Image (cartoon, rainbow, N blue to C red):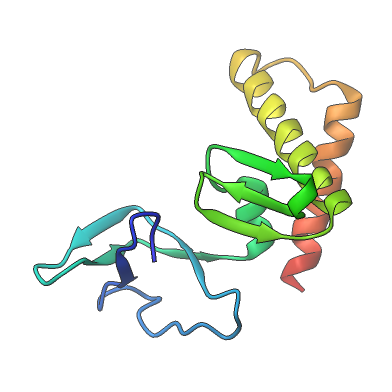
Length: 133
């Protein structure tokens, strides 16, 4: 489902057309194109890539709100991610570091990243690579 409660599925021509949720977390897909179906509130996704919940938390959405007392993060006002307050705060901090890094790389592409930012990016790369195994 989407934020507007549209039921979405990969397009029949998509390589992810037969993907099925294997847990209560469901399946998270990035997509390039959305085709609305003529019937009801459904849509088909084209050019999709499956992402893990961690990848979604670190890289997805434009806004992440941390509600420490509720032990959750809210991405873009509709994707709810539950976790311990400490882990949630680390995720929010990591997103902030990624945002700063991208801003620095875009505004000063030839300049090296500050050592602390570069170390944080290296740690995040290792974390994402370990998830692939």
